[in-house]
Image (cartoon, rainbow, N blue to C red; front, side, top):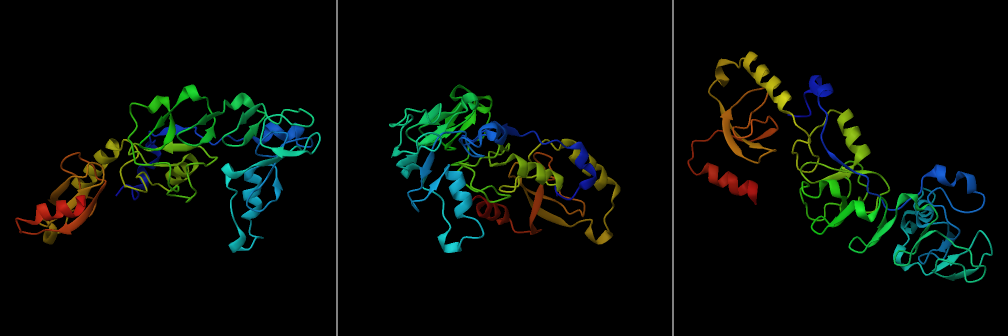
Length: 303
């Protein structure tokens, strides 16, 4: 019901919680001035890594993954670098000495990155992103540790502004984005948490809005307050009479928002939930006179 009412889209603004939560990455503009000396488009640093999977040298794991997952590579040979297995780095800006992972070169003493994480084998010269390591996540993130908390049930760090209001979903970040199918946990893109607790890319949510979709692609709950839309649908139902043969037709519906099952009168415009007054519903079966039907449907939906 929600996706089909395009004439009302310009009046709707989803109230979602934006989480600027990323695996630590660098903005391209930060490295342009020094790209000839050190760093890549992902990080500003004075070292390269030797990938333990293929024994080849790259500026960072993202450079490796982009190269090794390109269309030029045979599908069976495509792979990502096992980030925590990196054991060697190559100093590229000064002396080109290969050595164990550490912040300063053992040969020339150059600092390979002002931010350094021994656990992640991660270097970055741009500390303005306020990188920090989360032991529970097992990776480095940006934004400042003081601004985030780790939710054990969701299995990820969230901004403290939603600590007391977010809906927990078991391992919410350890899934693919329901729109683009990219794994969310270590994505470099901005994420957003929907009111139902499910997570997706912020850009994917914006694209979803452009296609007039205002329900969660995972659980179908409304992603914003649609009460004004429901009022307009009330009016449409009122001014749209049904043929005589449908006047007494009753159907069973399940509300996607409050999950209540109701028996309502059939109408071509939509079916309104008796509990929360939402039209974000779906018909689950036609009418029946069996007294045991309600309980059997409830068990079917719950389990």
